[in-house]
Length: 119
Image 1 (cartoon, one colour):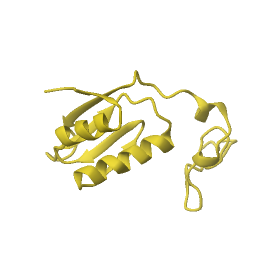
Image 2 (cartoon, rainbow, N blue to C red):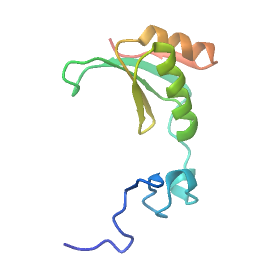
Image 3 (cartoon, rainbow, N blue to C red):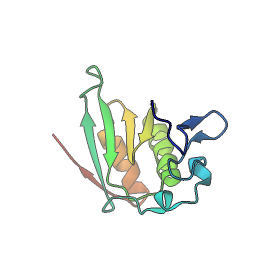
């Protein structure tokens, strides 16, 4: 197997997720990869998904142009508003359960434009 000259560290228990470019914790990253503008048009698209989750439904929020820290804070507020768990991955907020209406109300109260996507 070939060794990567930068090392293969992806996650550390001390710092959490590591930046692939500068090998620093993502919170302390100073390279251009972390400063790239997040993709999104400012319209929060709220949908319900069940694929790949064993039939369990998940409310998904996409399209918000926020940095990872702000997106994590917003995800925490939405999970608290719905009274359920969830996560933030790759610029997408996931809230466990079918809470599309509650999530849309919470987003609109905070000043975001929320739009129902999907069926």
